[in-house]
Image (tube, rainbow, N blue to C red; front, side, top):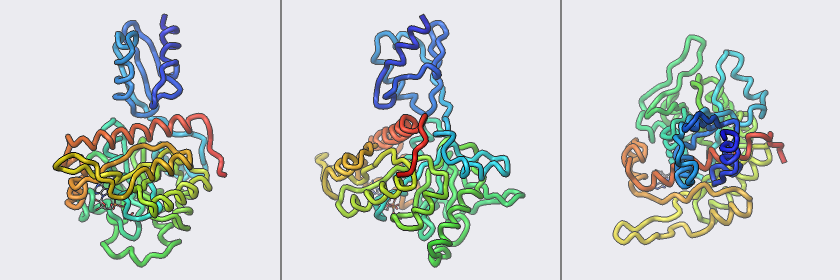
Length: 348
Ligand SMILES: Nc1ncnc2c1ncn2[C@@H]1O[C@H](COP(=O)(O)OP(=O)(O)OP(=O)(O)O)[C@@H](O)[C@H]1O
């Protein structure tokens, strides 16, 4: 019976489990089905089995043990950690945009919170050398990293998330004179010389743009996958397209696109105002064969909370937009797993 049940689970299909539940994740013990998922998807799985008359009669014990994706990818970069015995983050996700100001940092922070809420260990590396915004958004601009006896940086921790940023090392304004190669080296150091704990996901808030600095970083850091953030307006979309192509050129798969500031819901009547245009993100995603992870609203509350140094859902834990952010985070890790778990990506 248990092998029939497992075969049944393997045929279960959804957006999060396009290949079904794999047999190696499952163990049936009488009326209990134990599942160990390789990416956080507990709520999605519970919703799925609740719809199935046979599966819902079992008790589901769902555990998550995030797997590195794919383990063999770019081992030369991963081995940089091995020298001092630390393992480094399991998965490194670059969050990028071509154009500045589309909300990449805000999206990175919300994705980090959503993943952390799903039980993952998460960190953020602020890649904006010229204008680090993470300390401002986390409301800890005065905080400074500390060092281990062997001169590794210990990341700052806030709201359960590990973070490092040049903003925690130098005073505001000191980094603005840095030039390309210097900036790229500084970021590499920030990445490799930070003693991250065994993170499931390290999100890199990439510097805006698609120039040499971004290309160098995509090549030199062990990036597992990239997410591109855009607004629906044409100028942002054409820069986002350049970003997607840049990652592909260096063999970093783009696992999704987030359209930020897609609409603004009128506080009085709920009407959706399409301030930056409509349909642009979907069009680009279709042309580039990249899945859309979500359409995020433009929210006055979000801007205000971040300006005050409080992450959005810390300030508004019950806001309906958080469900949108969570859905995007869920799709991100599920897509990454589905795309990468058994195939190394080869540069174009
Ligand atoms: N969905 C949103 N609703 C309201 N305000 C937002 C939203 N997304 C971002 N913002 C605000 O827009 C401004 C720019 O956002 P952010 O700094 O995240 O952009 P960015 O793309 O990282 O910029 P850059 O990389 O050029 O520094 C910030 O004030 C932020 O609070």
